[in-house]
Length: 411
Image (cartoon, rainbow, N blue to C red; front, side, top):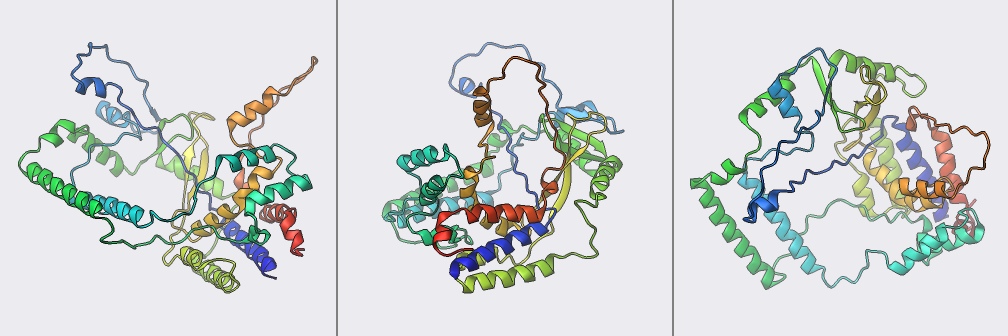
């Protein structure tokens, strides 16, 4: 009975999350700039003067506003450029407090014997199993051992480990930590006193001039343009605001994927989600920590924006729709679903880990001689094209083939 309740909770949670048509959060990573000559300059070695390297401009201006040479120089620093921050001693105090707290927590829980990692032996076994047919009954039963552990009943336990951040800080744990803390605080106090009389450090390390700050402020105040990073290539695209809004409106007018609403549904959705979580907590489907984690008191409305695809059309680039759902009502339920369902993903026939795996599969394909055509396809609006009901059916189909569920009388 409890397993059937858990299955129903997963289906309802999927349905609620999928109702948010705009919930598509994209995580991007940026490369950090590494200054290779730093060590040589500070090691006392003499470096030979080199000719300046001409760098390609990162700016793709398709707006009607021309840029001044100084504005181009400022924007060409790139989005990963970090200006030298002004020293805010309050932030240093906050960072030191967090660092000391981590040291005390590690010392406090140093006797904890829980193993949060994965052993090499279990990893090798999982790799050997997933290389077989994912829909073979014997293979699925073997995979289930590593998916859910030795207890068959834990396969549908939503023990994701997600919970609100703790504010617990242990005290008087270790005298060595207390001594180290006092020494660091003493040194930071000396550094602060020294900085009050000499500002040489800030003058030497400044990398963003007053003109650069003036350029940034002028561009931010210009309401006629929109500046966005390109979808691919790392360029910085400057567009007219009217064209940017027109591109977004053209996508939202597609009634197949988007529908206009008369009011913000966040309040009603939160009330429905709270009732569902209360029911799940009463049935021991979720823990008290998971319940508190999903109980967001003040959710915000997701932000919709697009990234220009200049590799498709440099002059009139289409926009890639992205919705920043951070802090929205569906962020934490989506994390719960991801934690629970991610273990089933490698078992699917269509699963590809990364590009390297795809290239490895292509290396084993031999094309016989003859007339063949190599065809590529471009998918438009991939995520919004997935039917919600069929997505939930795919989840049910996967769970139905887990042998521990059938052993417990699941239907």
